[in-house]
Length: 156
Image (cartoon, rainbow, N blue to C red; front, side):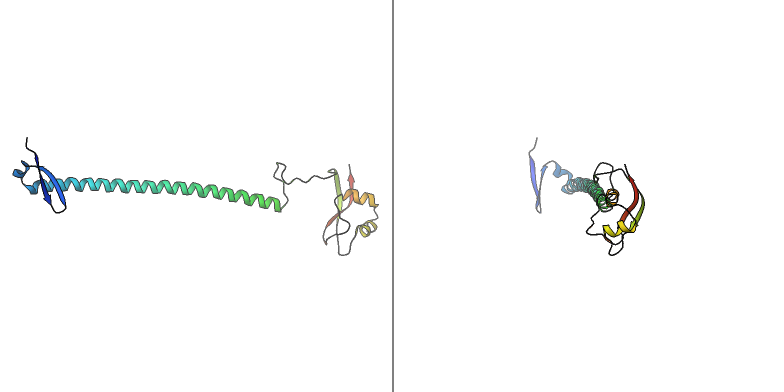
């Protein structure tokens, strides 16, 4: 068997058996370039497919991150609105303990400017003990205009 001869063409070197010289260098070069081109095309297709699939995976990761962030923002907004509106979530959060939860108020009065506990008691002819029992958390030193005050009710 003959040792392959080294052929140089420009910057590329090819190991070609000397028997190939009989077939002609151009035929061999054509076949080599054809194989090289098809390999490059396959590699290009593979790279394009890989890049495209990686882009889809990255987009899927990004969309799941965005969905989680949206959920967190929605829950935060719900919590803020619940706290601002003084609503209870049903799990004990925001529950205010009262000293006497069994108060039934039958009639209310909206405080006007200048009202005090004494003036409301006189206006509705109530005893101070009864007025304070049906309005347990009232601050007699500072009413605000429009504050609801219970004037008739029962304490159980």
